Amino acid sequence: MKNKIKEERAICKLTQAELARKVGVSRQSIHLIEKNKTIPSTVLALKISRIFQKPVNVFFELDEKE
Image (tube, rainbow, N blue to C red):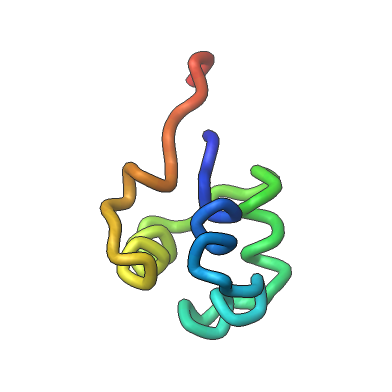
């Protein structure tokens, strides 16, 4: 799964720590999601979507192999 959280965070001038605080997870969790080391839960993906006020599918998409 690919994601565009890092790019959107940069546009909004949010640090990983700030985004993490807003969605109720650790900074390390945001880091792992951005590096595609972990896939967020549906609830977390929806919270991220709400913070940036964009649909979830703007941030996450399946790789060709998935």
